[in-house]
Image 1 (tube, helix red, strand yellow):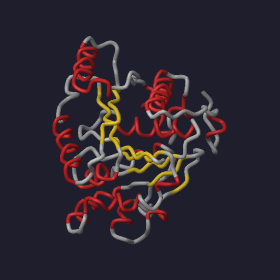
Image 2 (cartoon, helix red, strand yellow):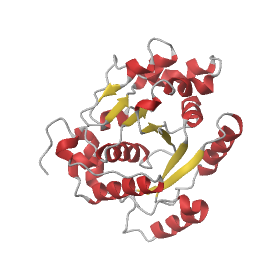
Image 3 (spheres, one colour):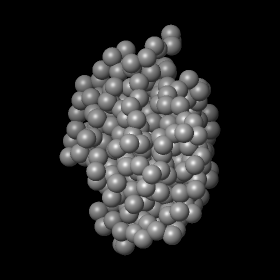
Image 4 (cartoon, rainbow, N blue to C red):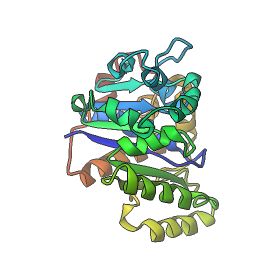
Amino acid sequence: MTKIIAFSNQKGGVGKTTTCVNLATYLAAFGKKVLLIDLDPQGNATTGVGVEKTKDTKTFYDVIVEECGIKDVIVDTQIVNLHVLPSNVDLAGAEIDLVQMENREKILKSNIGEIKNNYDYILMDCPPSLGLITVNALTATDSVIIPIQCEFYALEGLSQLMNTIKLIKQYYNPNIEIEGVALTMKDNRSNLVNQVAEEIQNFFGSKVYDTIIPRNVRLAEAPSHGLPIYLYDSKCTGGIAYQDLAQEFLKRNNDKGTLMSKYKLYKGELLDE
């Protein structure tokens, strides 16, 4: 049965896209059929899996204005088992178009229904805001993963996100749940990190993943090569952490798989490590 997961945090720079892209890739590497939906007009998730974005790239915006169906927007990637619904700057106009539409909060949900059975997991990278695109994602999703940076302002604005999820649950999606909270960008040189992590764990309890993603240079470099960390440098601390997170995610979902080698996973030519 397909599971749909939204990655959301309106605070930018918390590792949301990095977590979405790399978890999607590792799930594909574990043999799962995965669709990555890029709902951020910046399109970083799109380029992060090596898909070029141009002015002619079809996005969720084209589905909204009914220029094409969702099946025509989804494209293959060079990663086995992974497809992507791309994004580009045109998606920024979707907020204006959605305002005028009937059932505007459920446009994405109705379209996902056409293709969801083709995948084991559908992961949605939400924009760093709580506008109508994010509301569409939260209405369509089964659960939410919240990436939170291990820094002092980590909980800033988090109450607003939790309130939005509460309202979505009340009015549009009664089944929405918090899938998990991923602590990201941990800098072990900072004494404040452990205090922040403890505060987040006190707030979310068992929803916080045991795996913590470190601040890592190789993680920052990978997107510029159009590669997720498993394909760019699987042996770095960031690569190991995201593999552990994927395994923890699968375990929590009573799912399992065998990790294929990155040379079988990738259809292109890999960089030498």
